[in-house]
View: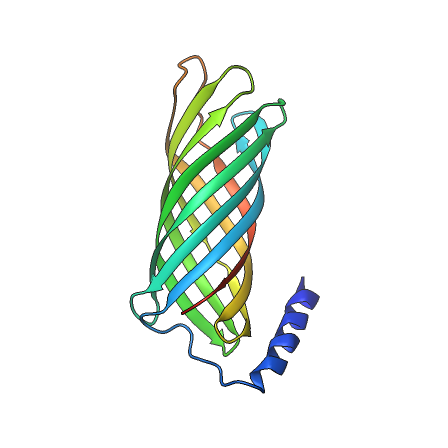
Length: 184
């Protein structure tokens, strides 16, 4: 992992000699990005693997205050053989911090809502409200373009199902996500 980061910094250093680097973060910048993550989660005594894709749009309200939203798509495979797919949204309010001219850190707490449909042991729908935090480290490879990676932790505050026979256990997920993005 450290070799990958070092290689990305070397590549971005070569690009820096050709162009002046714009300031990031700066008030008024729009940050479109897309995240993909794979996580392992637990729900009661069961475990599952989750793949998530989340296109996100952020805006820097001030030099360090980030506001935005993400749309989520999730696919879950459980150890019991069932499959689940879901969609949701996250509202985000956090911070953006420059660590170097080519390295930044985003701290993105969120409140989200998601709805999942399962076909494992009978069709059921699950809805949940969750709290989360995502802290990606951004490597600026070129002006206005970055790659990032970092951990995300989410936990349900409330959960309910459409089938009373199934428990609506709250889920907690730890995801390591990769992202591709830029700023305007």
